[in-house]
Length: 220
Image 1 (cartoon, rainbow, N blue to C red):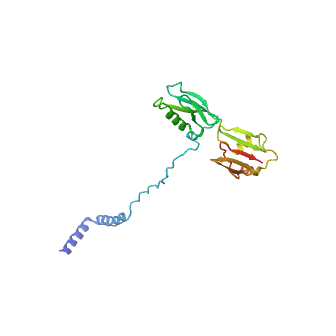
Image 2 (image 1 turned 45 degrees about the vertical axis):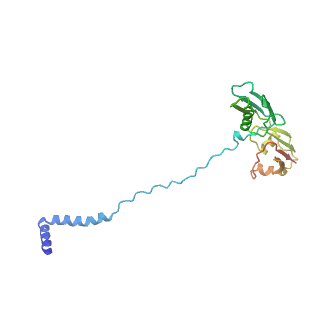
C-alpha cells in the first residue's frame, strides 16, 4: 500500500510538468532557510542610574542668629500697641517690656525670645500673637590688634574672614610677622588660640578663616 501511494504522487508530479516540480523544489529549499533566520532582538532598555536624594541644608539660616547686647529689637503684640515697642538689648543682655518687666534676650534666637515673651504675657493676654524682629545688629564685633594700620573693634554685618578684617584695618604694617597671626576665640568658658599664616592664606595654600562674634585677631 505504501509503495502504491508513492507511485501515485510521482505520477501527479509528472503530469504537472517541470514547472511545478521546480516550484516544489524551490519552496522546499526556501523553507528551511527562512526558518533558520532569527528575528532581530529588541534593543535593551537603557539602564538609568539611581541617584540618591540628598536633603539640602542651609547654612546660616535666620533661626540660627543669636541676639546680643546692643542689638535693637522690634517687639510687636498683635492688636495691642501698648505692649508693642522697639527696645535695645542692655549690656546685661536683658530687655524691658510692659507686664513682662525684665527678660533675658542675649543668647536667644528671635524665635526663642518670642516664645518666652508669649509665656510671660499669658496671664494678662491669653493666646497673644507676638513677633520679634531684629531691627539693628550691633553685637557682632571682632577686634584686631597689633601690627595693622588701624587696630580697633569692628562691627560685622555679614559673614567675614580674617583677611576681610585685615583689609578693614588698612592692612599689615611692614613690621608685621605674617606667619604668626593668632585668632583668640572664646568657646564656652575657655579661650582657644587658632594660628593663622597670612602668607599661606594669601597665596591660596591655606584656607581663610571665618570670624565669629567676639574674636580677637592678634598680629605680632
